[in-house]
Amino acid sequence: MTPARALSVLVLVAAMGAVLVPATVLAQAGTAPATRSSADAGIVDEDTDTPYVPTPADVVERMLHLAGVGKGDYLIDIGSGDGRIVLTAVAKFGARGHGIEIDPRLIERSRQSAKKMGISDRAQFLTQDLFESDFSKATVVSLYLLPKVMQLLTPKLAALRPGTRIVSHDYAMLADWQPDISLRMFVPDKPVGRDRHSTLMLWTVPAQVAGRWAFELPAAQGGGRVELAVSQSYQMLTGKATLNGQPVELAGLRIDGERFRFALEPSGRAERFRHEFDGLVKGDTVAGTATFNARASAATAKWEARLAR
Ligand SMILES: C[S@@+](CC[C@H](N)C(=O)[O-])C[C@H]1O[C@@H](n2cnc3c(N)ncnc32)[C@H](O)[C@@H]1O
Image 1: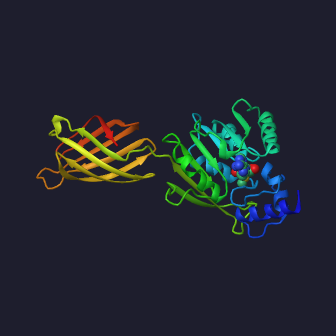
Image 2 (image 1 turned 45 degrees about the horizontal axis):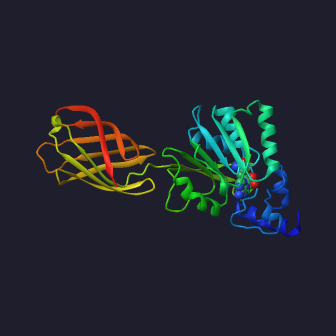
């Protein structure tokens, strides 16, 4: 490593959480720092060249629990280092997946580990640049990348299939996409940072529900046309509803991946009731169940609505 590269690595590791991290930290981490061809040519972008710093094993497990990784999942670790997140997801959580990593030495090490563990058919590793990779196959994405990279990736991650879970170690997305869950944990063996803590964050890609939804209430519930106008910023929704053109109170409006829910509470009527709607969004349609809670009875029915964007 050239002295200039060594200095850059120190700066980068400092950005990952340490104030002054000696090169021995990287040695303790078990590998030389990642390289890319531009870096070797002396062009290092300190904002986007994430150095190799491994996520400690207990943090890996917690991330996978937080994302609810299981048998049906396909996990992609973006910047997979020595492959530990993919290897753990496959060996301990029953998932399949792949890691993408710019450093071929780390890829080779990951493949060797998968081979030793007998899971090469379910855990793959690809030498790729994360800025040119396709993550669309993922049901879960994991990341431990510098803030600038997280920000650059935010639009691409937000456009993944609704319901895809994204779990990140220490660094957030663009500020307006707040995590659904954020937790801090004590990490005694954290290789960077002064306070020996990690922050884990989870996002679920929301379906796009902004626009005007319309549907008819069943005749048994008095009939009438419901219209719902929804505005959306990631998973944050606001909206207004009308029943036969008259404003009606809207409660519990939310989107969790593909799951779209809200309740109508017509007010100003002698009869008080609450109608709850809960369905899965597929493109411009939502389909699921409506529960009609009138004063004296409750009924459920299939429910479908269409979106005019
Ligand atoms: C902080 S490490 C995280 C490693 C692993 N995900 C973990 O949590 O243990 C970031 C990794 O991203 C890799 N990386 C940096 N820039 C990359 C790029 N443009 N494309 C792919 N991988 C990259 C680095 O080589 C490094 O191994």
